[in-house]
Image 1: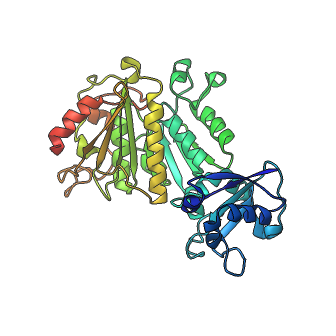
Image 2 (image 1 turned 45 degrees about the horizontal axis):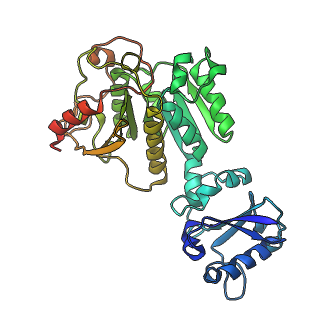
Image 3 (image 1 turned 90 degrees about the vertical axis):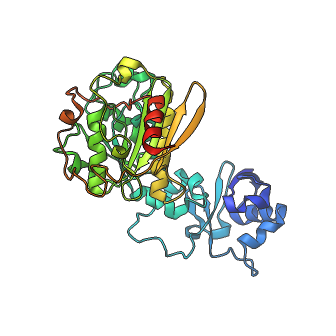
Length: 389
């Protein structure tokens, strides 16, 4: 009977680079014996000289730690999965404040747990994290799905629109059966169906200067999926004032952009655009259109950057602006610099509290959280003039 054995990244060189093997055995001990017989170099990494499993190696059958079952005598059957999960170095280095993973979560996130840059500690960080999505539209849809699937413990979502049939071409959180109901309710149903472990906090309101600080303050990371300049500047300024990272994404027709604005470590959105363009100069998605798959690409990048920030891994898009051209299937990157005269994060800030952003942007239209923004070409030209790249 075939048992699937998942191999963590550090041990894959000893099994020909494979991430999973199909082996035979009546119990865990027999499966591990076959594994180390077929791949002799692996034995010293799993077993001590006295034949016992090393203290830094944990083994799970499906979602159960064999230490809480019958150890190597734990029986396995066809279709079972045996996961080899190296312990976190030091064992007790994980902060006790981080939530523990349930047996169901260990199984659900097993492909994360075998990643050396995630592991148990990283998954617990994800579970403890609180991420706020501004909008349940084009960008918020893929971001919400991938963050929920990854195990982010709490997702907050701000939106006040209802699902329209025209949304379905790109807003994959929603479906035909939710047309006409609030997007937040549609989003809650979909997220909890995907991962019932995720807590969903809904804010059925327009984000304003009166409520933005109170809402954003309770979250660790903000992912901006807005479709209008007043809300984009509002989100930026609130994040700077509160010291929160702002994971930025925008889309238009066949082009998209992404960055991470985090004033503690790099520039903010105002460093790129000190002032908005004149009202009516830049069309919205409704006016200019958008390729349906484009927000899936940019929103997924936002989810990736959010996860990297939570894990403290990799090189974030802080100080970098990523441009994507779908028609040419090309990514380009521009360097962004902090503006020392930035009115909100510069040396002598003049914006020290939230302002009237509709008056600032010269518009009064209701925002739609769908992620549209300026074109990549316009962004590249303006950024080049500001940053000298």
